[in-house]
Image 1 (tube, rainbow, N blue to C red):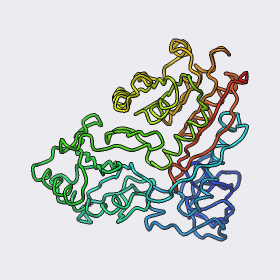
Image 2 (cartoon, rainbow, N blue to C red; image 1 turned 135 degrees about the vertical axis):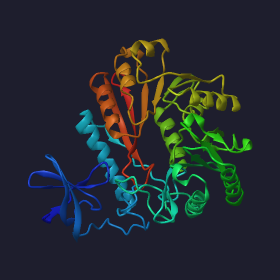
Image 3 (cartoon, one colour; image 1 turned 60 degrees about the vertical axis):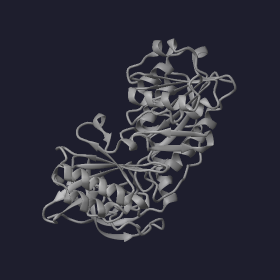
Image 4 (spheres, one colour; image 1 turned 30 degrees about the horizontal axis):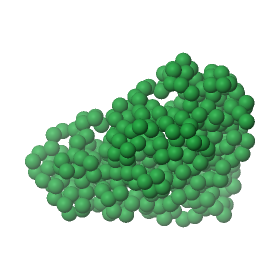
Length: 442
């Protein structure tokens, strides 16, 4: 029989779980906040930690709030709706500082003010899971339950735009009426400036009646369908006229950025625009300077940079994305200022970097794995070869901390600033930015 015990919650971890200590072991508890005391009981025990659940909340944090979403606590999409938004950002700032200190052994000379944006209806990219449930006589469409492959029985979602949330129940009816509801695992949502795209992953071929159902749905709800029979490279529009319907605007730079449903774009367009402005301001680009944008993707930073810098070199591992970036540059008459190359940036070295020529400024925006090889190459440059400034945008504080450690301890750089961006409110995801300069820089 499990014995309940009192636990004081000391902090939140990177997954948004409460952290406490009991009898010399770390205890992780969902749904509690720092400063609270709770009666808990273990649900899983390991040699170095326990996982527990709340039996009774004994004291409440003044920063606790009632979660607006009826699915919170079951749905795995959000982890922090019970914590006031400003406090969520403070937690993420602490996660960043702890990662820099504990993993990288470094700290920033100063910290930037956290970047806030909309807290609700912000998520313009999402992967909705689909599960045909025979017992319920319907297909469920939404996010997965926390720690489970089951799909939440949800009728709305507060972090999705209203027009997407309103489709959750109609999509159930649609999938249930199709010939292969048990062979449709997911729907990718992409919200553009004036288009809502839904990409249907189907493991078996669709029948003629399925196609008609999709067309009727598209007409009724004003959406465009894409189909994905196998891998992401097989994704294609149901109707040919929808091929080029998706784009997002960057009005500060008079740019329109086309993309496809399988392309990577930021989920939060408001924060993305603010992030671009911040990154370019932090780079402090001067007239006539040459800039590198590493892990450039579609050119989300490259094309705004080309409005300011003399030359921009974008490098990315996906040829699909670099092709798309080059086309966008040509559409905006920036092809003479912005060039794009496809290369695996996880396998580069200092000699490769030298061959590219000198860069005055470098922007790095890697995936979760970070930019270890790039950081190592930058650290091996001679003082006269080093860029005047590096801005590193990160979606994983652990790999940012590792790479910052390389730059500071091996490369002779200093970390001027670091800060967090609330790209994913109510989740434990930490987006951050850091600024580096050579110590010898004036």
